[in-house]
Amino acid sequence: MAVIDINADLGEGLGIWRLGDDEALLQVITSANVACGFHAGDPLIMRRVCAEAVARGVTIGAQVSYRDLAGFGRREMDVAAPELTAEVLYQLAALDGIARTEGGRVAYVKPHGALYNRITRDPVQARAVVEAVRAYDPALPILTLPGSAVYEVAEGLTVVAECFADRAYTREGRLVPRREPGAVVHDPDAVTRRAVRMAVEGTVVAVDGTEVALKARSICVHGDTPGAVELARSVRDALTGAAVTVEPFA
Image (tube, rainbow, N blue to C red):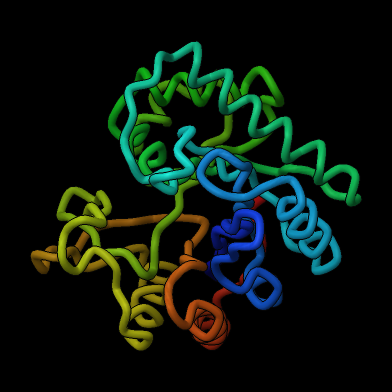
C-alpha cells in the first residue's frame, strides 16, 4: 500500500499582507513548510501558524530561503557557503524556538524557491544547507527532489524525496522554471490525476510527453495558487480513494 505525505508552504504573508489561507490548508495537509522570515513571514505569523499546526496535529517544517523579501525568495543568489550556512541556521533556530513555545517543534527542513532549485544541482550550496541542518540537529530530514545534489553531500543525514502535483517537469525530472509558460499546472483535474499517479505509480509525464520515474514520500501542493484549499482537498480525497495512506513523513 502506498503511503504519502501532503505538504504546502504556509506563513508566507508579511505584516498586514497575507498570502493563502493557512488555517484552511492546515485542515487538509499533513506537513506545513513554514516561512522563516527571509522570503516571507514574520514572528507573529510564524507563531500563529505554529500554534494552529500543533492544534491540528500537522507536522512543522522550516521553509528556509535566500535573504530575499523583495523577490519572494525566487531570485537565485550567489551566497558564500559559510554565510548561507549561518543564514539557514538562523532561520531554522528561529522557527524551532517559536514552535516549541506553542508545544511543537520543527521536524524537517525544506528550502524554498531559488534555493530549493539551486541545491538540486549545486553541491557547494547543497552542502552549505546540509551543514546548517547538521549543526542544529542532524536528526532533521531535508525535503528535496529525487536525484538532488543534496543526496551526494548529506552524509549521515536523512534526505526525503518529494514531488509536485501542480508543477510541470522536464524529461530530466527537474521542475520547469516558473518564468517559462506552463510551469504551473492550474487544471484541478489534471493536478489530482498527477498526484495519484505520483503516489501509486511513482511516475509523472514531462512537458515533452516523456514518462519520468518520480518515487517520492511527499507531495507538495502550493498554497499560493488560486483555489489552493479546494485543490488540496481534491488531491487528498483522490489519494484516499486510491487506497493511499496519507500521513506525515516526519
